[in-house]
Length: 341
Ligand code: SAH
Image 1: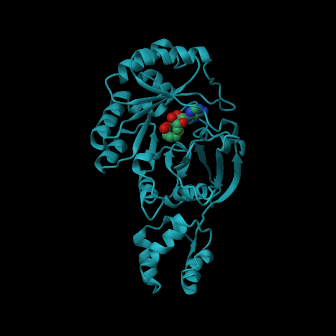
Image 2: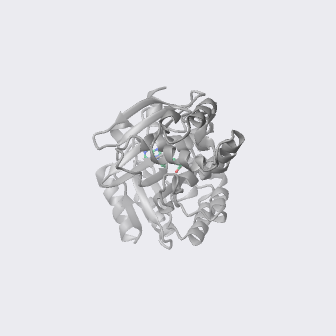
Image 3: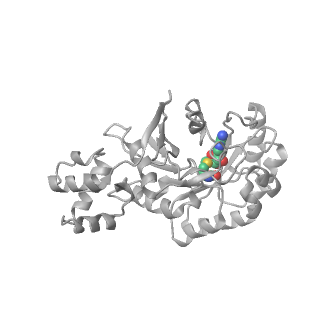
């Protein structure tokens, strides 16, 4: 049985033609899936019974199942999805004022090896398909009351999005499509460890998504310790690719910096960050570390966070200290999955 969410518009129309159904039915089916939130083909009552029957024979709407659903007091909800090969991934719905944001994964596990992150502790198993990425969006959408819509999307869950662009870009097409979820590109953020070639591809394909680069260290020796893939890349090359993306897309870059006690939170690190980013029109997003069971890293004290922040502000950087949401339900990458292993 094929996963209907992996099909492009064209492929669905082709299937319809093949079975002797009218091509315009494709838009109707999309509407049921993305807008009317159908969970089965039976619900698609304005389709002819024969078409519903053919659809159900050839396709499944969901390829995964919900292995766990957790809800935090602040309204954050997290799903652990298990796919047919038993691979599990996480995705999250965040409520903030009128915003309804979702965070999706792109791989089962992760190959980047960031030493403080739970997602990559066992390496990567595989890329998610376009349909499996879209499924996360639709499963989370269905947690909302009918009158509420998804407003923002971040690709910041498990995995390295830029290592799976072939599946991610078509999934994001559906997220932005007016017949899909209709989320504007300026409300979609892709978070990356910083793979220059893949960033260049985003520039070449004229993508207009917001890009967040996980920096985590102001110099190569420290960054290579924390983010091992940096060894063959280097901060200069990453920043150069990011600068190009900014030039082409007009989207201001975000740099993420996970603050780890006694490791990358010293005054000299803040000063180095200032000289690295001062001349760039970027936002620095500092995220106090969310501890992972079994790893030795710690969140810096309030005093050292303040000291770090002060130097960045005095240096004229545009910064944001991210509030932690959903940490009681292990909403940081890869943490819920580990509780199931
Ligand atoms: N691979 C991508 C996206 C996934 S991680 C990337 O590297 O950006 C999304 C962000 O969460 C990254 O900045 C990552 O470093 C950060 N992160 C991972 N584990 C964390 C933790 N325990 N506490 C705080 N941030 C964490």
